Structure formats: C-alpha cells, structure tokens
Length: 289
Image (cartoon, rainbow, N blue to C red):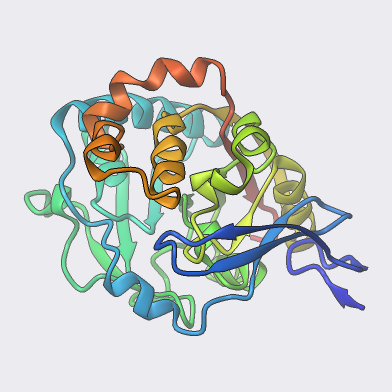
C-alpha cells in the first residue's frame, strides 16, 4: 500500500482509464487517489527533459489569440492582487512571457523564470523584467533568494512537475509570500464527455490532473493557508475534437478544418459555454514566513 503523492494519504490508488499520448504512439494509464481525488499519469516518462526539447512554449502567438489571452491575464492579475495586496511576483514557467509582460504593463514588479536559456519572446524588449533559469530537476532558481516576499505564479506548471509537494517546499524555504496556481480542472464536464479524447490529459506532459479538493489538500499538507479558489473557462472543445480526429485517422484535409489554431480557438470559444470551468485556480499564503 502506497501513499498519494499529493495528500500523502495511504490507500490503494484506483485505475480510471487508459488514454493515448499527445503523439498517438502509446497509451498511458490514468489513476485516481480515492482520498483527495487527484489523478495521475502512469508511468511517468523516463526522460522528461527530452520531451521539452521538442515542445517549446516560448513562441509568439496569433494576434487575435494573444489579445484575448491578454484580457484574461489582466483579470487574473486583478484577482491575485485583490486577495494578496502584493505587487511583487515570481512567474515560474513563464513560457513566452505574456503573464510577466502584463504584470509589468500594469505596474507590478515581476521576475520571469523558466528552463529555456533564452529570454521569453514577449520580454525581449522589457529589460526591467529579469529572466532567471529554473531547473525543473532540482527545483532551484539561478538566484536562490529571488522568490523572497513574492507571489509565486504557477500557471499551468504544477501538472508538469514530478513531485509537487517538494516543488512547493522549495519556494516555502525561499520565503515566498503567496502562491497562485492555475491548472486544468479534472472534474470538468469536458473530461466526463470526451473521456479518452479529452486532450487536456496531454500525456505524457501532464503528470498530475487536479481538482480543487486535491489542491486544497496539497496546501494543507504543505502548511499553506488557503486564501481563495475558483474556476475559469478557456476555449478547448476544438482541441478535443481534433485529437479525436487524429486518433481515428480522419483525412488530413478534414482534420485541417478543425485544427486548433489560435484564431480558430477564439472563434469557437462559445462552445465552452456548454463546457465551463475547465481551469481551477487557488491562492495560498505561506504562513511559515
């Protein structure tokens, strides 16, 4: 009998289903902890670093998609500040740098961090936002003290990390003030409808699949005070349809009509009125400071 990697509760982990990986080369098993409800990809890939050599998140986006994403990011920034009153941020897993860019443009103090050696594309001309290297193996920043007193932003990051508890523990040791976490919501209606073809399983990149209960249990385990939580909705239905068509080997000319490009995702976003709350977010306070 093992222990859950999120809530640390003992018990038998239960199998949910097998799902195809992003490349449609093999299936992975999704399991669930009966105590906290977190789901897990089994097995973890042996070479995580190799995966990200072929999947870069540091690139410019379709202008319409970028604009709409910026509107949503600014709403998130207002939400975080409302609950923390903290203008100092550490954006871990910054990708292309859009979140840090919006932080800078709205008058906040931001540091961006990721594993890529080059600066994020949207921060190339913003020297006022430092960029630091973050090692996802050791969970160490190139500047160990950079997170002190800051709100650590983990947007679509925690699901990629092999050991989320140890990962958060590093920032607690570095005296971070708050945590803002946003991840796909595994309890959403989309997952129940599309099941095997729910593209946000996104295995083997996504190792953990959270709901609000499992995030709260993780905070409790780490001694992080839960401050607020809720749900967002982003356009994803087209991604599931396209993933299904890829798996069924539909003709390429037909698949291309449903390709989830940035513009197409924006245009089809009303579909998610039927499938809301596909992202869960939580804010926590480091009470050990």
